[in-house]
Image 1 (tube, rainbow, N blue to C red):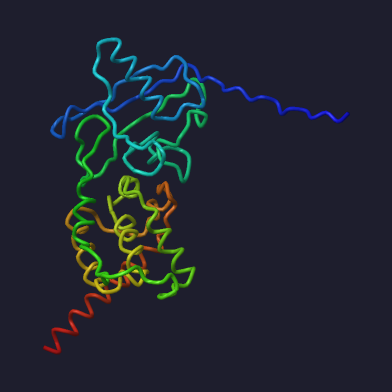
Image 2 (image 1 turned 90 degrees about the vertical axis):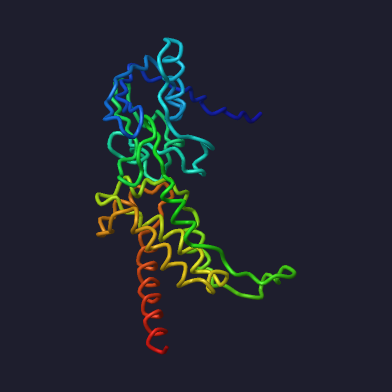
Length: 268
């Protein structure tokens, strides 16, 4: 009789003696400071945000104020989990949002430094939470797309080459977390803005407002953020691994938009 050997059951491990240096700041006008906390034991299967939940439960039980931090979906989709962990946006694991970072990436006895995004355009609201409404202003400036009304068109009515469709969807993966800004030495938002532009400008549906959109969004971006000098830190920090190629596409379309405007003025 054949026998099947069951795979060895894997048990979760526990990390011990974790020291947390957490940035505390009561508001945008406060200077802020680091406070040190200790987590005696935590499962290595816990996410980084779950570890912060454990910390907050401990602080509340002691009658102390909990640490304020942004979070929502905890599935790497919403982009609200904005933390600098040991000087890296979203922590040491590439292509991962903070909510998907697990404690197994750390060791027992580790000291972990936790800060908010550091960018002039992202003022600190409290502790680890920042105001990222500048991103909303950029998206708003892009306006809407023009779409013909009526019944749904046939799927093959406007064929789109697969490489183009893939590039558009890659850009659309941007979750607007702001890691690109926090990682950039200049505090630039070019990767975010370019991703939001590219996913429409590459598709037929985005063509009517293409040049108007890129001009408005780039100039709104320049009101809040620094200039891009191609450090590439934005791509390295992006949890969705969006390529800086989209910045080149944005710059190309922006130059075309300006040339188009000058040409129209000369005709008049």
